Length: 300
Image (cartoon, rainbow, N blue to C red; front, top):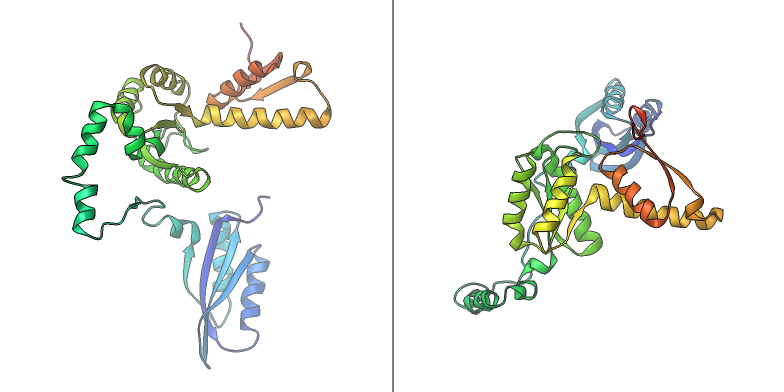
């Protein structure tokens, strides 16, 4: 059974008489239903009534509903409302653009915008490479997806992919200090995606491809690498492959094996599987068995 986790965390707001034992009834019911209680907070209290928020981790949505129904069945306890904590985090989106320099005076405005900014623009016009010094370009990354292979959800489209891409932008900012912005494209045509990325590339210092289904992702990456002078990184390929190789290098030290001696099975030959296979071969692995949903792959 999948354990209860924060991915399906809910907050129940309960109202009941301010009497000894009422909170115990609620927590006992949640425990009997298999809920994992996190926080218990007082929202409002007087001599007659108590309002509390109880945060509970569930296994999935059905389990969360089961927990709520169990609490509703308790005599004397009213469930005021139930909040899904994950959905609350996503309200209004998870990222924003903020200014690095405050605009407090007319002089500030004249320097960050017209007329002062014109001198900076002409400097870049004379030497385009100065865009890396004088604009956000050096620290800006475009996260590109068409929503065709999102997480384990499959082809769910660009709008549904946006929460995932926002999350990836948060990771770049939090762990790397990089300003990444999600661009979810309303096309799954290879050439249209490539053309779109080429046209928006002047504003970015790198391109990050994410959750684009195989085999189209290979063609998109190769075409963009040839067309652009900025780095092009495909997370599902390069990110996975780098982590797998790092893990393998640590593992062989522990078991005292040499990489050329290994027999490696790659289970799943999509974008990640192909990239992992390539990097393992470059690292010196000689014997690799690739498997897809039909079984072991071989030349015939």
